[in-house]
Image (cartoon, rainbow, N blue to C red; front, top):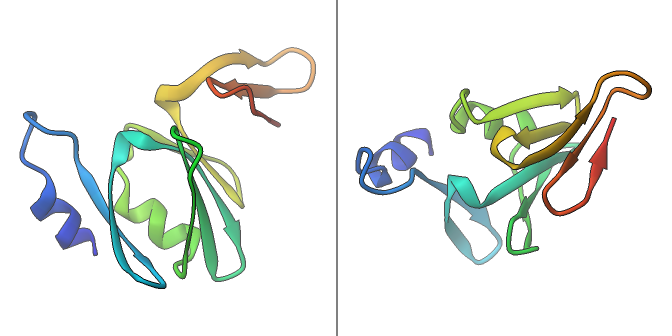
Length: 106
């Protein structure tokens, strides 16, 4: 799948894409549409900016390896966030962050 993602990327002209295996086939998604990913055993929920919830039968580790390191960061063993969508970062009290959609993570 990583190779497929690289083949869909056309340099700086277009955002990189990722091919996600779903029950009905592969879903091609712009990487910059992904807000965050949540691990659920051997599955991963991918939450998009458009409020889509895509369930794929891949571990979070495999999804993390497919995404660009400079944009995604694993804040917890079960949570991978897109750094481009962080709205606020609170390091004083509860060490939390809030994404642009209003969701907060510790």
